[in-house]
Image (cartoon, rainbow, N blue to C red; front, top):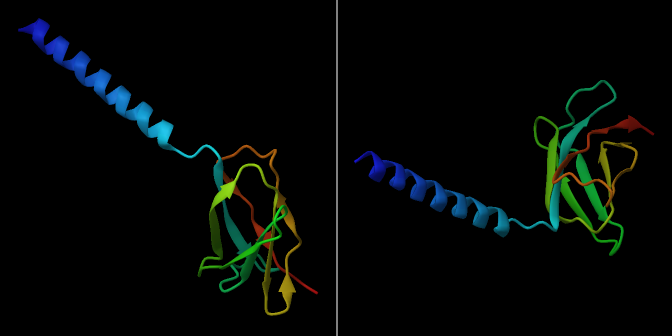
Length: 117
C-alpha cells in the first residue's frame, strides 16, 4: 500500500514538472515589458499624462495615457531594440529615458518626472 502511494506521488510530481517545463518553454523569451509611474514636479501622480514609447530601430511611437495613480505600461517589446520613453502633460514634459537592449529584465520599471519648460 505504501509503495503504491509513493509511486503515485512520484508520477504526479513527474507530470507536474513536465507541465511546468512546457509552460516555461511557451513563454516568449524575445519579449519584455516596461512599466512605471509619471509624477509632476511635486511628486504627485500625473494622471492623464501621455507617455510615448519610441522604437529606435523603426521610429514607431506608441502612446499610453497614465492612469489615476500615474501608472503606465507597455508589453510585447522586443529584447533586441532600444526604446525611448518620455511623458508630457499640460505643457510639462519629462526627460527622455532609454530602455536599452543591455537591460535584461523581463519587466523593467522606468519612472518619469514632469518638469515645466
